[in-house]
Length: 220
Image (cartoon, rainbow, N blue to C red; front, side):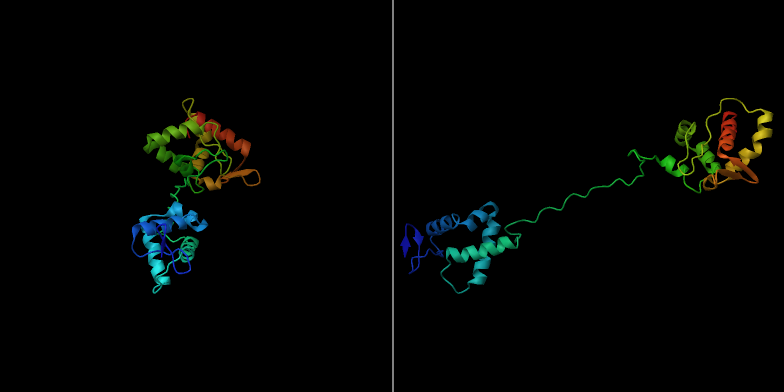
């Protein structure tokens, strides 16, 4: 039976016709006026239509009467499981490249030079050797050394020379400079306020004063 292009069964319930495009169009118009139809509308594509038809055939293989109620059941199920033919999977969020470089407390980056130079096992001999080899490292070293403190021990590294070393400088500071250059920085940390170089013990103040003198004379 057909009423205003809508095919109905003997009970007057609209059904989906196998053929007759106009009647199928009228049937789906009724469906899209339902709450389920309104939920489906934003997602409906050709792939979605094919998927709904596939499930209708599986659920009602021998049933010639596909009613709006049966169509709603199929669509509600597909929406509930977020079937990808109706609701495409959301794209994976773009991977965020996290910058793992070390930072200071204020958020600024610690340079590679500083990371390398302040490693616990790094000796002043190694630092000086790299400064001799690499102009960029030497520039960084001279820029930060004056008044700079090493984070691992609070000890100043040598600054730029301000005068030419005299024989007296070498006599008074030579042994201190030799030990300082060959001692790993991890052993230059004050212990109970005392820094030990070889057999010599210095307070932090005495140690820094010697660093200043040796630096000013160009011995460090």
